[in-house]
Image 1: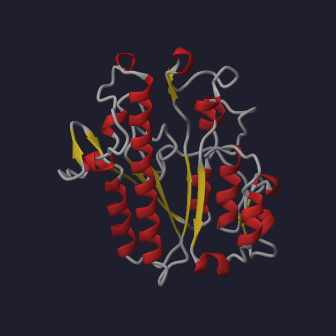
Image 2: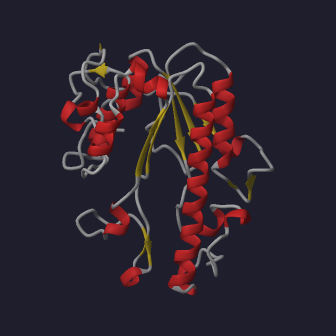
Length: 274
């Protein structure tokens, strides 16, 4: 969510300047952060936040954790309240976060077996661990499909789009390495090669002059988290002094789209959360 590319990034630099969400708010876009992970690490400090575990949903939550499905229901509720304004909803999933992979899905999605039903990963075989991880991926596929269904169902009132990207991958015991968080220069591909999925409604494609055939060609390129900041700004037609079209994934496929200009980054006001 920072404009700083990986090569220039540091937590102190990022914390002293506005992030993507701040710029969206300044461009008159409503932002809501749905939290089902540990925290937003300060990214959502100045926007409204709704945490999954505060919802008290027995059907989704238990043992201090909630299933990501809960955020799909929360998204449906948000869209049911027609604001008549542009809106970004960030769904911060628990996804396939280790070490308790077996808690990331319901039994309906236990398709690969035998599984590793413990957070003590070294006590499982790699086959069991991979099966459990694959079950969690299958459940994430379900969550994304449900999210798309909700957005498509609201397309009579909104021009909707979904951009999904993992923040990191997971090592599953290859070469004795588990979980994530190794320094980038040493991290294996399993921790740094992550999925990204874009879905857009027909209304969104028409409103932004987005060429789907062009996107299919561009999808074959190599991209990174450096593209996220600029691509989301581009999706809303927002231009700022820090926007870079060369890092906007959709820019080559969106000729002549209308734009709105917002001034560059400022030092954030930590007291500004609504």
